[in-house]
Length: 117
Image (tube, rainbow, N blue to C red):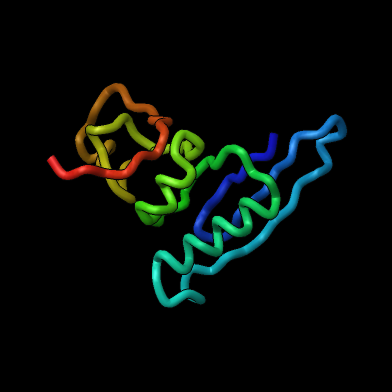
């Protein structure tokens, strides 16, 4: 199985093999693309090039386009640094501390296309 783990800075492509030596890295800067869809297309091409089967977002901090999410449905995990839905957004740790909650944690969930209420 191949797994992609991403942050804003880089995309790590991990391939499982007996020696665990098959690790690649590719940087795809979103600022180099005129649109979100063009950026997502470049990510998709890199993932397919490395035969990735699972995407793990940790600190990615970008919204993926609907077509990209649909294409990878059931194969994108997001790690959010708070217990959702209580503390959404980029400042989850600050919000948790400000709220003075006694129990906190993280949320790991599959990414899906948002539908309006």
